[in-house]
Image (cartoon, rainbow, N blue to C red; front, side, top):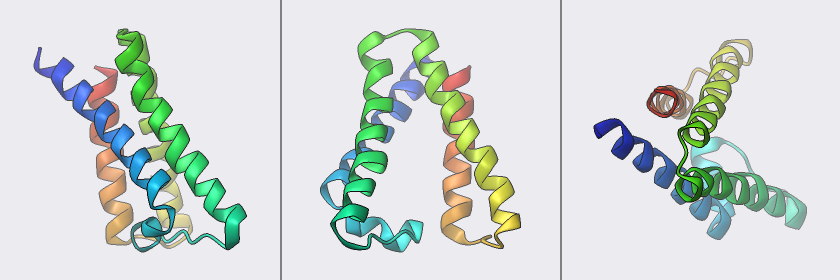
Length: 113
C-alpha cells in the first residue's frame, strides 16, 4: 500500500515538473543549465520538459496498471544512468545534477518495485 502511494506521488511530481516547464520554460535555466534561444528553444522546452513529462506522469494514473508505473520507473532509471555517466564525461558534477540523479534513482526504484 505504501509503495502504491509513493508511486502515485512520483507520477504526480512528474506531472508537476512538466507543468512548471510548460508554464515557465525560461525558469528552468538556473536549475538545468538549459537556456532557450528564441521561440524554437522555448517550444522545445515546453514540448519535452513540459508535454512529455506531463504525459509520462498522467499515463500511469489513468491506466492504473503496474506496467505503466514500471515504464515510468524504467524511464527515470534510464535518464539517471545516462546522467551518471555524463556527469563524469562532461565534468558536470554539480549540485543540481546530483539532486536530479538522486530523484531519478529514488523515483525509478519506487516505480519499478
